[in-house]
Each structure stands twice: as C-alpha cells, then as structure tokens.
Length: 149
Image 1: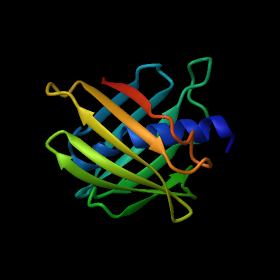
Image 2: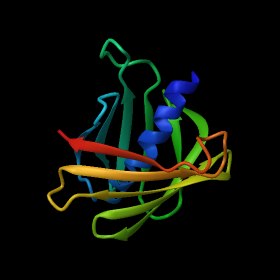
Image 3: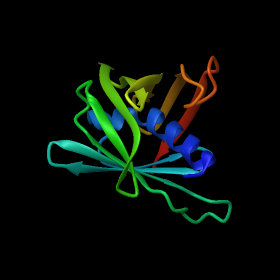
Image 4: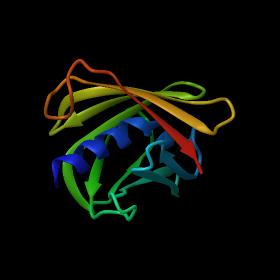
C-alpha cells in the first residue's frame, strides 16, 4: 500500500475508534476534508468499521480498510482488502462520549488517540499523537473533525 493511503488509514482509525464502543451508533461519517469515509455496521454484538479513501477525482481508491471490534480494550486487527496489515488498536471507553485508543504496529505501541462525539451526536473530534515514526509524526498532535451523514 502506498504511504499516503497508509497514513490516511491511520488517521481514520484513530479518529473513529469510538465507533466500536457504540458511541457513534450505526451509519456513515465523513472527515471534514472529504477524503475519508467511515461506515459503521453491526457485526453481531460487535461493530464492523469500513474506511474508504477518496482520490482527487472524488472516487474511492483501492485499499478498503476494515476491522471488527468489541471496544473492550483488547487489540483488534486491521485488514486492508481482507488481508492483515500488521496494525491493531485497543479501544477503551473513558466517558459517555469519549474513548481512548492505543495503536500498535507489529505488536508494538505506535501512538494513542482520544475521540469525543458532540452532545448532539453530529460531530466527532479526535486528537492523535504518535510515539513511533513508522506510524506518523512523533511529537505532533493531529486533530481531525468528522461529520455524521
């Protein structure tokens, strides 16, 4: 997978970790820049997240990322086009509308993220910090905003 989609997937994952906790519910979220789209579906008692990236032409590019998680603080593997990519995340609920996520790459901590949904359930903001340069810019806080569609 090319580096740009890989980086975008990392942002998507960290920005929407709380979907696994049922905080967001089912449906679709779009990152404010319009590049990333998240669909949240029921998978039994779990949540299935599907992330897709839009190219400059507005069409979805190859490399769909999926994961299924309970949101119980245990690692959940991420798949690209159904194949493991060596990444996982462990999500913990830390409030009614807030989660904390630990990102891992090949079993080693890679960074953390907190995400919070607005009281009206329409906007989500996330702050991500990476601890491993293989995952993202170390020491730089990345803030993303998503709108529910």
